[in-house]
Figure 1 (spheres, one colour):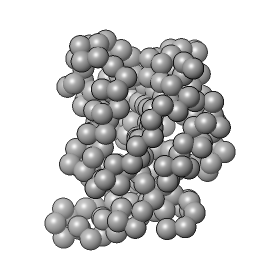
Figure 2: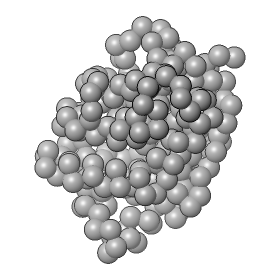
Figure 3: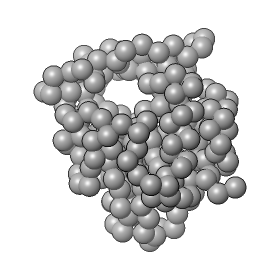
Length: 218
């Protein structure tokens, strides 16, 4: 797959009705193809089953992360943040429209900052800046879930269109996202550059995703 290659995606500029259809595909991908399972594993590594904690979900889109966490941890407080008002309108409260590069929170405002399928939209230096900001407001850890740049994940959506009926936006944006995604070494290096104490980097197959736990306490 070569190096990371970033191109514009259509979802952020889509009309509300089209965006909702593509967001539904993203929820389906998370629930059926690894996203929620990876989040469960990440949280199990850093929390206790009955624990109350706070988490900021950056790039939350329609808020399926918050819904899933509340099923697992009823005492958790999850704030969904996204710059796209159309996407965020579907998220549960509390939700906040905002810029990930200018987070409106003081240092150590949350136990955890989480982001899923978000970082691959940005250049490496921008990712380092984002992770530094996440590190500043997370007391305990920054949790990352994203795509692995791999031929299988690149071909998955077109190959399964007949079975799952993916929306045209999803079919356009999915392969672009994979081309912009990471190897495990690349993601680890970006986190280290941002000053995170990387505890665990994991590749997840057959979902072809990568997760990272970056501790904020050395």
